[in-house]
Amino acid sequence: YQDKEYIELINFINTRDEAYGYIVSFPSQTFAKFIFEDKKRFIGQDLLPKYIKLPFLNISNQGGISSDTYKLINNDINSGDLKSLKKYPIRYFLIRRDIEDSVVESSIAAQIRQSYQLLLKNEMFELYSFSHAVPLIESLNIEHKILSPIKYQIKFHALSKNQLLFFYQSFNNNWKLYPTTDIRKYSIFTMPD
Image 1 (tube, one colour):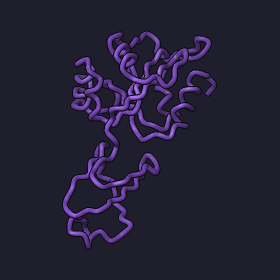
Image 2 (cartoon, helix red, strand yellow):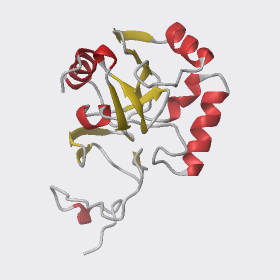
Image 3 (cartoon, one colour):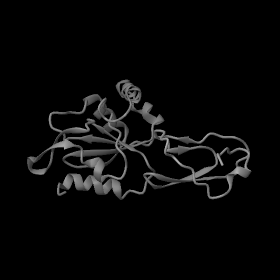
Image 4 (cartoon, one colour):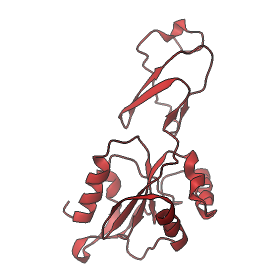
């Protein structure tokens, strides 16, 4: 992979030591005709999500998200107030100029450029920090660490009553809990034997 603008963006994001969060790109395309250096073209699936360690949230009815989620997020964007996206764990907005025959709606680009901190800009990309995002895991008296895209460590402190743990990811029946202590002795946890 040799395109210098792509490599610059990939390295910038992958070497940052920040909390987990999604990248929302404008325009949002999963499959398209992409433009590289020297006007080279690539037709197919977006390569950035394959190289960047953070996940992409493609706001598209073809982007792999449920139609209900798409409608909610799309309505928030079309409302003209990107701050309404703060209920989602979004870390970055990415304005792209590498997708042929596709442009970013000028009002969205203007709002991003006016309201958010520019982190990186080159011929193909502008990356902005979205500081309003909720964390991926949220609750009172917890610490969490993302060990990998599929493994999280959560430490609870001073629990004295029931409390909710918010995990802002799509539910999966294959999730498993591996307690490091016997949590059955705490009445606030329920766990099958």
